[in-house]
Image (cartoon, rainbow, N blue to C red; front, side, top):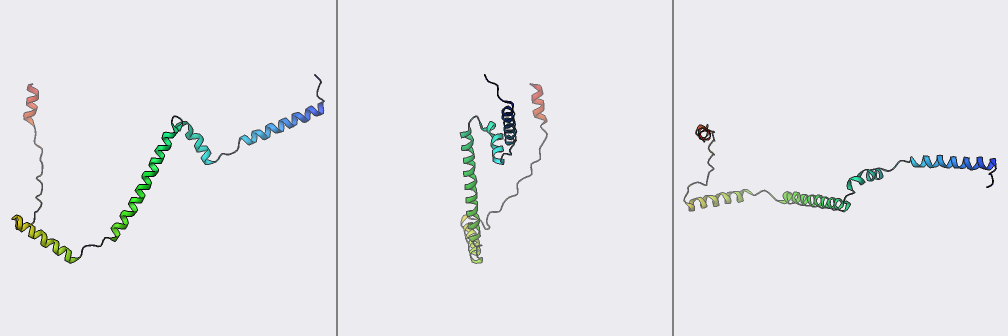
Length: 131
């Protein structure tokens, strides 16, 4: 083996040193947000990424259906006009006629519920102790 001349050796080593420095600087580049997110989420999604993609697609479909149905419901509510006075009077007359046909003078009225007052259960306590 022949020995490399010293000027060549210094030139080769200087170029290698400069290349190592430039390579080291390029490794420290900043990654985009999506790249960093992908790097962080990859270990979590690794066991079955197809299942996670399918789940995300289902959520997208649910949100799309929710928004499309909600918009239509608001339009329908806005288009419905309140009943006129004549319609309200006619409904009252029909209700009164139905009440007369059934045999009651007035339409059904709601009966207020009885208030529940809890009572002590001393008999039950004695039965449990006796057994």
